[in-house]
Length: 464
Image (cartoon, rainbow, N blue to C red; front, side):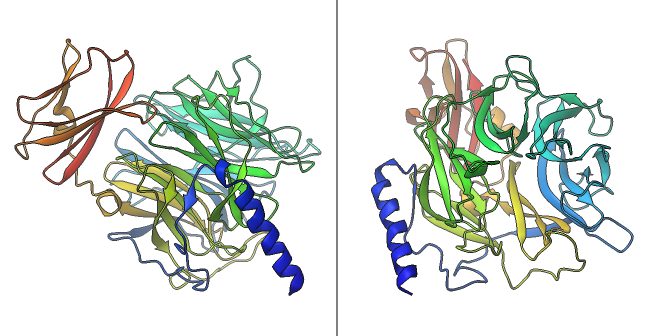
């Protein structure tokens, strides 16, 4: 007991010593760790869970690394699949498509078949207006320290795919690292993510200005903590704060069961040293990002042990300084039984990754490492955003004189805010039907216009 107390005191002292450097804080007692099923949280209003794939005796029975995206009006989901065991030599990358908003899904199709030397796993998506790119992490068996490199396939219709090709750095060399599954496209168009580089798995933030993510990747300046064949910091995700700061959160391989975090104020080119936060974590992958209204979120298992239950969506109402709101997505009470045995399989909602599209946030995961599932929550439940039509988005106009006007159809006035691509508020005005916001004195670039009118909120990215 005395040893436990000393350990806790040391941990708390470490947190306190670095409090001025921690990129964000967590509301006290937000998660009730004594309630293993729900953490004392309420289920998000309107939350629904869907199954993309469920195993049978006639199919593969291991699934993990589930990632969703949206492309040309359809939803796509990829994951790694194998007969029984995690990272087995028969592993292949499967994907499925839904043409009805996620209610029904196609049978699994191959995005990357089984390879002869090692195996492949899911690396995530980037979707442009015209092209869907799927990233394939390739793990050669010949690498004694583990690790691998990243390749991609692409498609213009979601069915016919190019041959595998190497993802490349700005130097033209292959990205010799395992790609983290949720590269983030910032409002200014830059893509920021992370990869775990050879030898072994040593994490580093990466960024590119290639909108497809196929080329041009550069390493951010980041000091990881070396643990031999891997870094202490692993499997990160990120969000941006209201002032434009990027925050990357990491799984901590030192088993503190709290997240590590690092920050960048220059669009991902340089990063602070990762420090412990007060955010609980089951030592698993997580997913972070920003909702349509800019609100930062984290989807994870915020528990101080290895059990990846429950699954929770946590949000920050002050732009990313404090996470103070949390909603239950899946609990201990509604998890299905583990039906088939296999290496590294256990109960839980494993490796969540998120997608914000249309009127929902989708959180995808592998339940018990066998069922491919996702839970979606209406944005109106967590942001106050009502259903937004394309016509409403088109009501935001930018004239040649660089003045923004809004066609008001739902009310006599609208609150209009203009943010830089990094999320910094530069203009705010209450407009009537004839009002405009003048950006003629602002530097040219990419901006986010956010309109609140008659209980609805909608945004549009503009370039001037």
